[in-house]
Image (cartoon, rainbow, N blue to C red):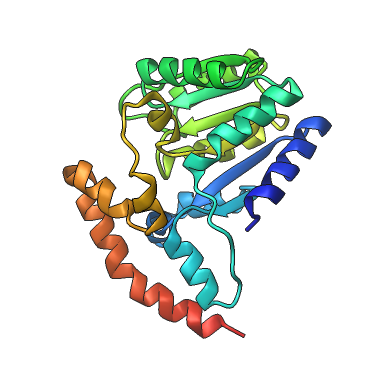
Length: 236
């Protein structure tokens, strides 16, 4: 798993070479889903780069004797947008809602002069990354001329969609960022910096959206001891 500096260097080199890429940001929820969703596992195998999106992944990596740096997907949007602006490469925003994408696009355009937003594509409810709407979105992304797309579709949909795009549009970079665009649009509030530093972002998120996230984090908590034991066994 690359640290932030190496990731940005890799993306810059790929943009300059006209080569596509897919970036997934691994967290504990993904680890749980990877155990039970074969299509998600297949999509992960087709990602070019995977970062540690969450302190539990950093801790598990340390237990396994292969330490990695924390590189959350939400923290990648701004530096990658800045890089795209520097390199003169247009980007696309995909996922969330039309209103949120419009607000995120305005924020990124103001924060990174010269950045061109080539497309904002928001799917309907019940989006199927293997369905006809996904086909149309892939075609629209290709026609837009974007060289990099931020995907805010949620797991496992964004990673599965990225894997399809990676095959259909080999010159486009795909970055799965979860709630990253909603944070920029301020349609979701991110945990304060001190909570993130204290590895308490999960507590903030479940507190702000308990109906949607309480079960997810309960499943993660139940899975963590077994994952820790498995990681420790691979050490050395």
